Amino acid sequence: MQVTKREHACLVIEKADARLVIDPGSYTLPVDDALGVVAVVITHEHGDHWTTEQIARILEKNPDARIFGPAGVATAVARADADFVVETVEHGVTIEVEPFTFEFFGSTHAVIHESIPVIDNVGVLVNGSVYYPGDSYTLPDRPVEVLAAPIGAPWLKVGDVMDFVIAVKPKSTIPVHEMVLSVIGKDLANRLVGMAAAQCGSEFTVLQPGESLSV
Image 1: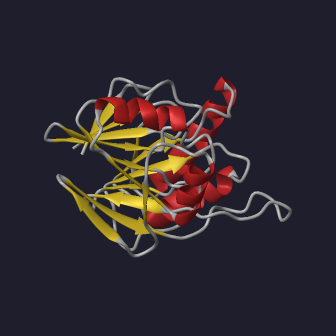
Image 2 (image 1 turned 120 degrees about the horizontal axis):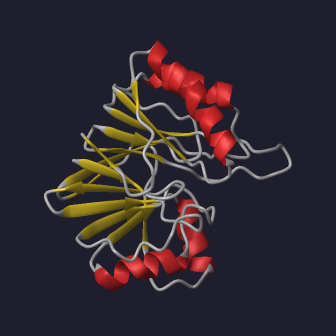
């Protein structure tokens, strides 16, 4: 498989000419060049992880692509009167869309503040290898090859990310969810999270938008 980072929280995973798109939101440049998309996974309802425009762009070229997300995403899509259907998933569910297998973990977004309601969130493990937790520190139930680790968000403390990487102990770690950070902030977060990756023997690779990692 090949994992290509797009801006912010968006990943495109490719296998055998088929593609999966994860979290194409408002902080990601238009995803209008992805062909062969068989599925889109939206981890939660926040706009930096999905927009109707991004999904429409993908479906225009890939009309048979299936869209997956937790119940909160399905509700948000219905509220937006979007012209597509979300297949609802939750913790413990496994879905196969050839050549991909998706396993979903967790149920809630990390707490931003006690005054802000906690929403649905699922992490997704792709083909038993690539894990993206969405906006959470939900642990997978097994070792993974690649962890896409969020490094910048209102809900996030870098020390918690470091502990998360050490707990997951992936073979490789790539930082994501960083568009809220300045260049200096990204460098600092990458240095600290990279230190945690080194502690647990994980190779830390910073991908720029458009760059890929082979799994």
